[in-house]
Length: 310
Image (cartoon, rainbow, N blue to C red; front, side):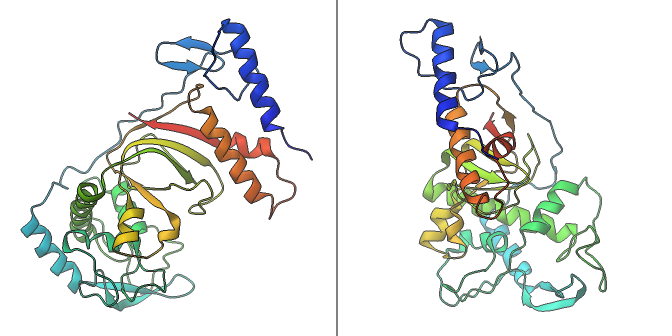
C-alpha cells in the first residue's frame, strides 16, 4: 500500500494557506491540508483547535538542593550500596557485587561533580572500563510514584518483569540518588550550557511527567519504542552527549539530551513546527519500512507529535 507523498502534500498545503491569507511572502509551513488554518495570537491553529495540554503534576517536596559537601558525602554512601542481581528471566536473586556507583574509575576521568550521572547513563560500551550499570528505570519509577510514603525495594525472589517496584534501592536511597543527579546535571549545564532547540523521542510523552525524559539530537535515534514519535522544543535540556564526548564515552552514539524533571510542555498542533514534524515522520518511516513493508507514511505521521517547553 503506497503512502502519502509528503513533498506534494506539503507544497499543496503551503500554497493553500498563502492563497487564503493573500500573503505576499508566506514563511509559515503546514502539513495538514484538510482545512484552512486560522490565526490565534501567538499560535497558528489547524482545524481551529490548539492543543495546550499542561498538567500540574506532582513534585516531591523533599528533594531539595544539596551543597558540595553533602553531595560528596552522599556519593560515598551510594558507593557502599550494592546493585541487585537480576536473573535472565527477571528474578531478583539478591545483592550483586557491583555498587550503585563506582567512584574509582579505570579508563575514564569523570569530574567528581559529575560522577552521579554514571548512575543514570550506565555502562554499555567497550570504550571504558567503568563499572556502573544503568539505574534510570528505578530513578524514574521513583519520581513517578513517590508521594511522600516509603517505597521498599523488591524482595529477593520477586520477578522484576512482573512486579512493579524499585529494584535496586528503596525510596530513601532513591532520594539521595536524585539529589546527587540533580547536582551533577547543574554542573553539566555550567560547563556545556543548556541545550536549546529541537530534540526527538520515541515512546510516550506527557505534559509533565515529573521524571527525567531521555531525548536525542538525532532524528534516527533508536531509544524507546515505536508507539509514538515526538519532536520537542526545549529551552534548557541537559547536554549529556557533550558530557559523554569529553568525559564518559558510554552510549554516546545516542546523542542524548536529558530533559529536566521539573519541565512542563504543551502539545502544539499549529503550523510553526510542522516542518520538524514532517522531517521526523519521514526519518522514522524510512527506518521502520525496512522491517515492516506494510507500514505507510501516513501511519507514521499519525503517531508523530510536536511539543514545546513552557
